[in-house]
Length: 159
Image 1: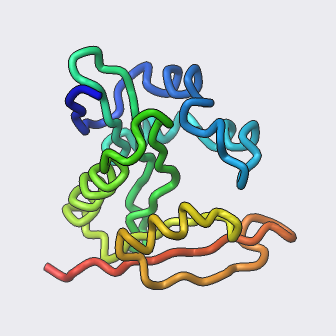
Image 2: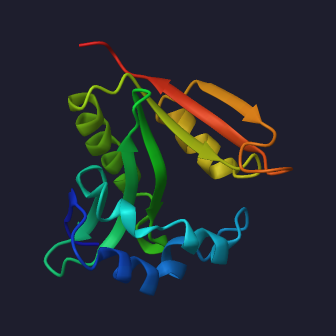
């Protein structure tokens, strides 16, 4: 793979991600991929565009990874989704996306990071542990009755 840059989302990115969705999520046995599409709301590409990032191949600009997030009034830098295309996994892109988001979240006053995953998503749990998420709590009905999530937290250093 050629060089990859990390940059804020831009117009047209949601459409490109949805067009190539299976390249990011097609092997996801732990989620309902059709439902997952609906959680890619335009607000992340519009209202929260300054805290959402893409990993782009140089020189063609093709999206090979993305992170959708925002800084909540609670002080959490909330990561809604992070995904790397199948053929770009193992290159450290998810880490680079997280680092970029974390730097912006800190600038905005975030005191910690928060992310969610399903209890069955062992890959996500392992990745977040590697990223320093040490607080992991099972919330039985977090996403509705009978829809458990693991709430993952990582404190951020005080300035």
